[in-house]
Image 1 (cartoon, rainbow, N blue to C red):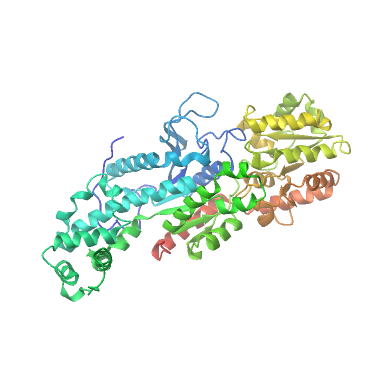
Image 2 (image 1 turned 180 degrees about the vertical axis):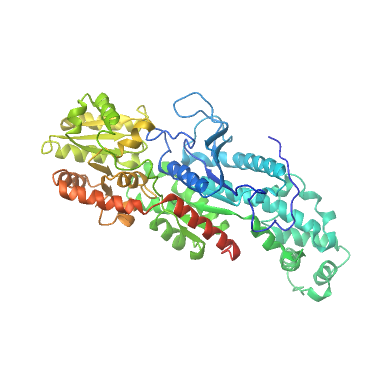
Length: 570
C-alpha cells in the first residue's frame, strides 16, 4: 500500500477530532497478538482468550454508544486451524470492522517474540489511516478520536504511530512558523527522513541547528532568536556553554516561543496524541508472580524485554485504562503514571451471552459432553460438574485441577471434571494427558475437551456447579467473571484479580499452586448445596455491576474531559 497524505494542519487540528461530518465519531482499537478476530477460537488458540473477548465486547459497547470502531489486528498468517490467510477487512457488526495488518512474516508469532513484527505493522497502519483520512479530507492524526491499544505490543505500535505523525506535524509547523524563514532548511525532513531523524523527539536539537543555518551570519544565539521571533521575545543564552548544548538550548527557547495561529509547537504536538493504553497485564506484575519458578520458565516469558517496552510506552503515553487494582498499583507506583491519567475499566460482562440458563436450554451442551465423555447425558444432568476453560498454557495450571480433583473422586462419586482448551497437539495438552493417565482416580471422571466450539462453550459456562481456575498469570480473570455472570460458584487462585478484588468474600480463593487447598474447596462446595448456591448468587450480583455500555460511555466522557487539561507525558 502506498502512503498518501491529506492536507495537514500545522497546529495538529482541534481537540474535537475523529467525527465525520454528519456521521459517527471513530475509534481505533489495536490488539496485536494471538488470533484476534471476528471469530475467537475459544480455549484453543495460543495467546488467545480473555483480552480478545474484552476488545470485541468493548467494540460492541462503543458501537452501541454511537461510534464507528476499527480494530487493527496482526494478519498475514493463517487463521487458527484453517488455511485461510488473515488479510483484508472483516465486519464484526455493522459499525465494527477488523483490519488484518501484515508484518513479521507469514507465520504465527507468540506474544513473547512479537516485537519483530511491530515496525512493519506501524508503517502499514499509518499508510492505511492516511489513505482513509485523505478520502475524508481530514488530518490522519484526527481521523480517530481515540486510539486505544491493548497489551504492550499494541501500545508500541500506537506510540510509534503517534510519534511518526508528530514528526510530520513538527515539520509542517516549522515550515509555517517564523514567517516561513525555517522552511528552506527543512528539505532533509522530506519523506521517510522525517522519521529517521526523529524530528519531534529531538525537536530542540533540530530546531537549534535549523536556526543557526537560517541565521548563519549571526554569531550570537540571541541575535538568531531576534531575527526569527523579534527583539521583544528574545532570550539570552549562556555563551560559555559548548556548541552542542548551546544549540539544544537555543532550540528549547524557540520551541517555547514559536507560534502558528496562536498555538505553540508543544501544544500542537500534544493534540496529535490520542493514545490510551490498556495493558491488561504488566511484566513487573507477572514477574513477581514467577520469581520462584526455574530459570528456563522465566527466560521463555521474556519479562525483562517486556518490562523495557512497557516502561518506554508509559513514558510516552498520558492516558491509561487499568483492568484491575493490581494493574493500577503497578502503573502508578512502578511506572510513575499520573493518577489523573488513569481510568478504571475492568472487563465487563456481555449479559446476553453469559447468563443463567435452564437445564432444558442446555440440552445441546449436555449432549456434547456426553459424546466427549461417553457418559449418558441424563447421567451428567444428575451429577455435579466442575469446569474450567482457558488457553492451553502452563500458567493456567490445569495440572493443579487434575491433581486436586483426583483427591476427591472417591468421596464424590457422582462428580465430573471437564477442562477446555487446545490445541490437543500442544505440548501442554500432552503433559496434561500424561498427568491424567498417571492418576487412576481420574479414569472416567476427568476429561480434557480440547478446543470447544463457540456455540458450545458460551452456554457451557452456565452448566457446571463449580467453575475452578488455578491460573497464576491473569490480568483480571475474565473466564471467572463470565462464569459468575452465568450464575456459577467460582473457586480461584489468589492471583486472579476478579476473585480477590471484585468478588472478594463471594468467590472462594485458594493460594496459587496449593493442590490440597483446591481439593478441599471443591470437596466442601460440592457437598454443601446451600453454600454453593449462595456463593453463586453473590458472584452473580457482582458480575451484574460490570456493564459494558455504561462503563464504555464513562470512558469516553473521561477521555474527552482529560483532553481539556491532559496529564501529558514528558
